[in-house]
Length: 638
Ligand SMILES: Nc1ncnc2c1ncn2[C@@H]1O[C@H](COP(=O)(O)OP(=O)(O)OP(=O)(O)O)[C@@H](O)[C@H]1O
Image (cartoon, rainbow, N blue to C red; front, side, top):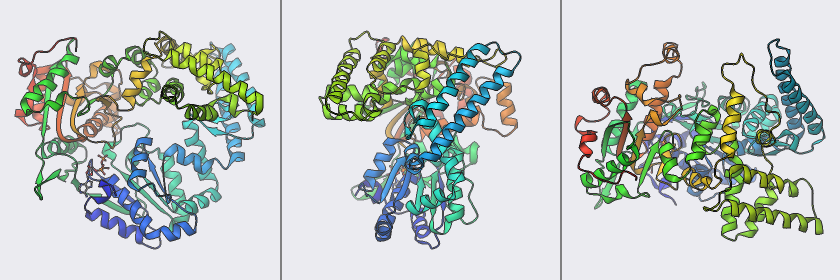
């Protein structure tokens, strides 16, 4: 059994077990702060159901469903419940596809309707008297209309990274829209869900799409007697704009809270509580304890901030702070990559050190916001052929795992999926694909000069995986329709220039980028480390390095003034730059089990010092400046 299961029971765990034992079944929301053990309670609840309901679940062919935010989190939970076949742990997209994919006729109807909606939107644009791009829009309309004909003839739709209707592939966004609408419309699907998965738990529920919550609530509404929906979350940890935040609790539901924080040392907990205070006033208790010679002691830990100027020495100043910490704490592990976690908002600093500066610039600088956001976790659509195909493929290829290489090709290559090949045809196709794999491996070597475009062309030439339609449009320079002049921002033009920069990037920059996304470097994003924890955390706050206007530490601390839009959002009680940044800061600081160092780069150090001293987030003696690093000398090219 794992550590999580062995954690002592809290009142919340006992309350949750009682809730799960109740007939008729009762849905619930567990809402509690960072490090309070929500995921631990979830794992214990799964284990309780496996031990108390296994006969019933087996007899009825049922499973307990557990939806996690990432595949990494899903793996951890599967491990925690010893891979019990009675527990179905998956990410939301894969769960929805498991539910929706048998309804192929309805899926086809939905896709046809979706294309028709898109046609209508384009037709409306064509009808506008000021449309400059009528000719291109007409072409786009023709293309969509011809897709309609192809889709009519398709018999099977599959789930992929990006939608390609003509090839029968539905991407992430479409899966969410499609399956939630199927659940909403079909009572039979609601019945099937409640019969197959009588318990559905959702972890990190604050970042779940609202339409997923509402469609699951519909299942509960009709079949609630035999169905239990459980959400585990913390609205203060909502990171993504698409997340629901707080889940409204229905009348018959149970609300379970947890007052403790089991993760953070005493010092870090004080910081975390002070960050949260202006939001909802929640003050967590307890903090981390350790057992020494059979006795429990609170872990004191540390929490400090360095306020440093924005200059050319930021990267080396981070190193200096690490060096300073080794002296201060008499602990060399501050210099070891695998002992610390450095959390950044945007990654230029990480990108430079890990060898993907061009990829970073192409996807971040003057690019559409979906590219910038998707760069943070590897989900931007242009990156997907590399993240989901090229990198796993060359990794297996370099380890001579030919069978696994073949499995990827079997699953992804249209050469193998669109026709059932046998005998010589199959042999010829496989030999061709092998050539393609060898060429890709060559192009991705660290000494190769191949560009992203070169790699994509090879994928296309050898039909190794199906490429997203948007990507194909840029590759083939087709359908690059520009938006109307009366649009606020010429999004398509921005996308076109970003894609040109992206195509010109050295393809092997993806090697460093992958390390970054897989958390194999000390760097991670403040957005990407939900649910995780580390002994030593360095959080870097630097608006100057980022162009993501969702967050601003200068605005949060009061160094720069708020825009009219910010003021309007605040006045109207809407989510705003201050509340978003506070949540990001809260999530990143609350990852530290023992020691936390915040490094804040700002253009106005004296003012930042004054304002931060007033917040009470850090003790006065824990606030440091550049002069405190004076004795630390390291090479500036680090
Ligand atoms: N009852 C408990 N007793 C002691 N330690 C616990 C208990 N519950 C959880 N922990 C420990 O506290 C830490 C945080 O737990 P967990 O990750 O489950 O919290 P969480 O609420 O899901 O966190 P977050 O929302 O910040 O991601 C883990 O190290 C876990 O082992």
